Image 1: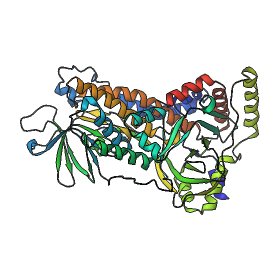
Image 2: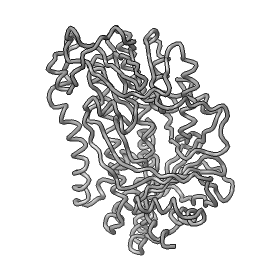
Image 3: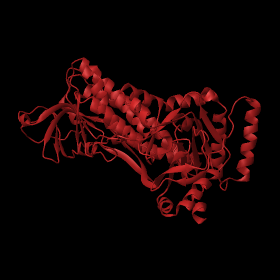
Image 4: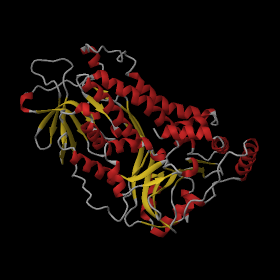
Length: 521
């Protein structure tokens, strides 16, 4: 099949290919490749740090000068009569997974009891009285840290009563060599992560929000058409809070506005926060896969092809979720071909060795034998992925891939969380987890501010949120982008060097434990 020949060597969506893997493999890449990657990362990090070099971090708790506020690029406010508008302590714009989790987290915090919290969602209320028989194509890999957060919110209990699939092992391997790395918990007893459909997560959060109706108000089908920002100083006739105008004509005011409205965030755009972003010229093809035979299916599989990564994530004993990162035109072909050809292409992408060369195989075998002689008890055996027999009806979907990062996560009375602040390639499966990490940290800081009687929208504690989250998110994003570029080539020297790096890492259990610990945060 011509299509299969083109597809040999794609990269898709994995899970624990994170910062430490990138750092371990960094030494194996030649200078030209490193310079190319550094040029891309320089744009991301330099732009993020540019606005931080003006001394804005050292702000007194007692006073905040207008000049320092202006350096955050505040938009001057329109004049208006605030007495006619209902004022909320916190308004969260965007009721997806991260926004709904933020609302639940604030609503359950004892220090925020009595605060007026509002969640705005443009869509309909997501109610799930009965779990659908068919699986949804959009899934998330939920790390132990994210599961702990959801458990503390009372949401994880709802998820476990609906549908989820834990896995305790992951195998990642290179299509251009026989190098691989496996991650697993000791004796395969503990879960590494959980695959959960996005609609189930949202439905569970919605159910919990219903139980918090005394603490959190939710407005569904509420589309925002305008934000009006407070001035940097209190003018007599200006509004002191963020004003939110809805399509219905209603106006609301927020002492703190939290933007959880996705990668095309209106909150971020209208507040003037710059974004560093680029497209990967790739789309992710997702589908529900029917396996050839029932299996325990507790392994997440990812193979790096020269054209992008492909991943198969467990949903049940008989079904898995596909995430295949591939060029736009090949993604369109995958959506248009018949089911049999599509299944053949998937199996070929996981099983074919057409991209391997004798030179690389021989060198890799010698290096692996040397490592085995030095560390005879280290390493892990290769497993074969399950074969695919079919796909779910109408489950093939594609969406474009890219990277984006807001140079600032906060402005005066504004904070960004989730995809509104950062967008990553799905190969490491960290998108939702980064967002849930934002929720946990911002809740902690707002709780402390409320306990101390401070203004929730004051920039002092918001700056602390930005600093801590960017310290975590930027290295993770850089590592994900690095991994994507490292494995998007079949140039022999690079393939050989990354083969050595992957094999060496696989022989070091302590290092792999550190990688899993970092990715589980």
